[in-house]
Structures are given as structure tokens and as C-alpha cells.
Length: 117
Picture (cartoon, rainbow, N blue to C red):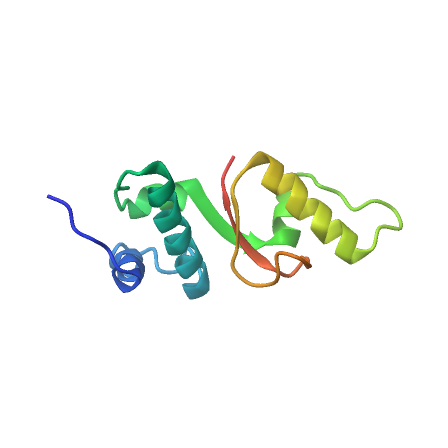
């Protein structure tokens, strides 16, 4: 038996499982929207597995992921160029969802969700 999950249900499921702090509220909204689009693209329903999603995706800043994945700033590289390069390198290797900020002008403080790799 399956049930449709609204955005509110999705967010509440994280709270109910004690995982409400794994993502920001905006991050959960972005993840929900992404998973809904993914379902449409795959033409199949996904199962809501809060623990699985917490293992598969994580949220932090572009700057944090640059450090985690060894993407170092080049000498003389402007912050804006570096942020764009970090985003590009991450996006070439995994799914990147913007939580805060602007896709067209990434900044190191922008919050993103990535599919862990």
C-alpha cells in the first residue's frame, strides 16, 4: 500500500525519525522538490526512507565541500571564480542541489545538498 507524501509530510518524517537537524528547512524543501522531479523522470514512485536519504545526501556550504573533496583555491583565483569551479567540479561528479544562493553566481557561503560520493 502506498501513500502520497506532501512536502509537509516529508519534512515531518525527518522530525519523527530524529533527523530534523540533518538538513535545514530549506534543504528539506529542495530535497523534496528534487525527489519529486526524479520520480517524474524515472516514471516510478520512490520510497520515503529518511535514514537512507540522510546517508545518501548531505547539506553544507560550497566552502565545506571544497575542503572535503580537496578542491583547492589557485593562487590569485578570485572567490567568485573559485566558487564556480567548486560547484562545477562537484556537479561533474554528483548531484548538486542549491539550497541558498544563485545557480548563476555561486558563492562559497552558498548552502548546497550533494549526493555523497
